[in-house]
Length: 493
Image (cartoon, rainbow, N blue to C red; front, top):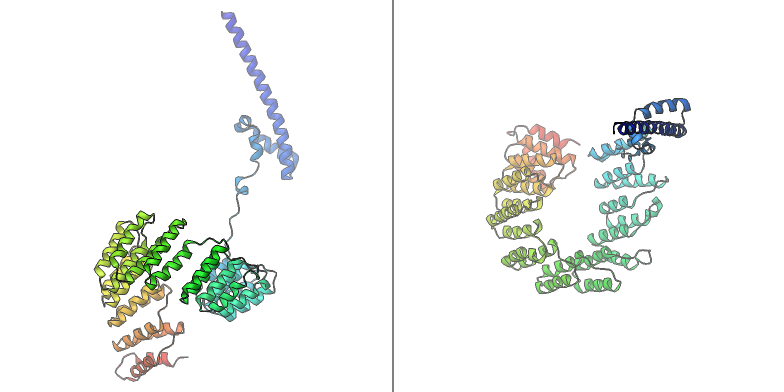
């Protein structure tokens, strides 16, 4: 037995020696092969590369465990990752600039410093100029783009349509090919929408009838725009004809299509026909959304059927659509019209219980009717509440607050709200500015009135005749402290 054990140990030792020898030969062959590959790939000296790689390969246990694995890791992982898009400094700065003249100067300054502007830079500048209604400057930039080999995207022209008037938008649509830009159905639909929204329906209808000749095949969006246009003119039968044409051409109606028709019927008080359309939607598996129900609820409220509207909202869930903010806002708006503010507040509380976060529209409903009833202190609390909740007031919020404060003669708080409004880059209406200036003058706050006048001048907001007369009286009064500052502003160019 002992001799057999010794023989077994000797065999095991011999096997281990052969295994080490085979592994060593395999490693040498692999190192030699990999060195050649690395030298060729990296285009470096054979000896230097081989020695460096051999030393690292010898110390690597993973190479022996899986010798072919290293072939796939000769590069740093970072090189295989997609490069992040670099931010263009000009675009970042032009977005932060408020004054369009400063944006133009920035554009030229970058160009003088050797920066070459490409499409993203031109697009950012065009958006800025169009929003500021600097259309002459827009045309200058477009003319410069036309004389380059730059390929413009359709999206920039669609954005310009929104700011241009309908006539200029139509003319710009015709010029799009001159800017190496292919017109698609998307820009055609955008043009139709601008024409319809700006009471140029005849022109929109003519373009719609010529769409196939122009190379466009109308889709659901196209037909929806035309249905909206006919309904805006009160032409129910014509809208139905477009709807029938839509079906004939096998273009599927969407929920938006049905919402346009249901909204029209609801506003006309024809709730029976609107409910019939709702059933037709469900039959065709075009399930109603929260907007559909909101339109029906508005129709019921307009007929004085608040309770039925409320019941419809709570029945929505059984029809497969949970009530949303817009549905609560419809009910709150109807309650506000009838002076039932406390019930509107209760609905707001109900929203929160259902874990529906109110948005700026919801809060605006409350602020609007509180201000109309002269309860501006409560409205101001709602304004603070929404800000604490992380909801940013919009221009409508601030305008309602300032107008409400002016109506009750609280011009000092109105001035504070105006400051917050301007800091948020919103601008009041000319009537609000006028009312605030006169109110501040009447209350003896000439410094505040001067501040508002300066802000009006920056925004090129004009005064009405009555406001001028009041200001002149205050400027000429000897007993008004600070009148000299007011005179300076009035006489400054």
